[in-house]
Length: 114
Length: 115
Image (tube, each protein chain N blue to C red):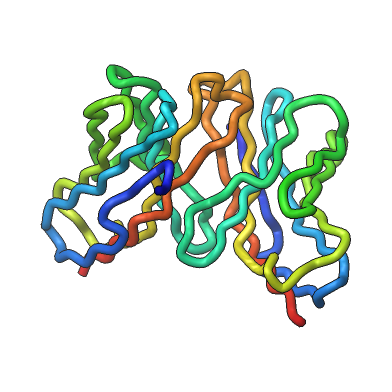
């Protein structure tokens, strides 16, 4: 089983719909992240959480919200999806040592907004 | 602000030949540098990192990278490419003194290894 699991893996939705992407991890890491990947732009940070009570905006948080339900779960919501939110979304984790540590990624959730 | 540049969208190399994927960075302090690889329909996987010490860092799958402070570069290298190395490669930088210690990724370089 994957250490970082994302659901759904693929989703097609319509403009204006609410969408939730879920992430769960079995690595026991405190830090969790949501990134979006667009061709040629690399990965850009949407939100991050250093523990259950700590949520922080990343560089592109507008139009998104998150919830850290438990140490192992971090969900990303699009309250009213728009076409330019069509992208590949990744959840990642890192341990508390964090600064020098690498990220561990899920396999991605591909979202298409029509 | 920290930034990463990967100047080549795609690198083509023949199997058995050496490969280089370029990365340059900009940070205000001493950088922590990372390389990740993404295979089709998969998440990113960590390859190697430079934190401190020896400028030549060895990582997974025979890859290595050289930290060059004067040129602000961290190029990824492999002496002999394999077809299975074909993937998307991302360089990333973190300034350990920056608030939040966030990782900034480059735009990615697609490596194509031809038989």
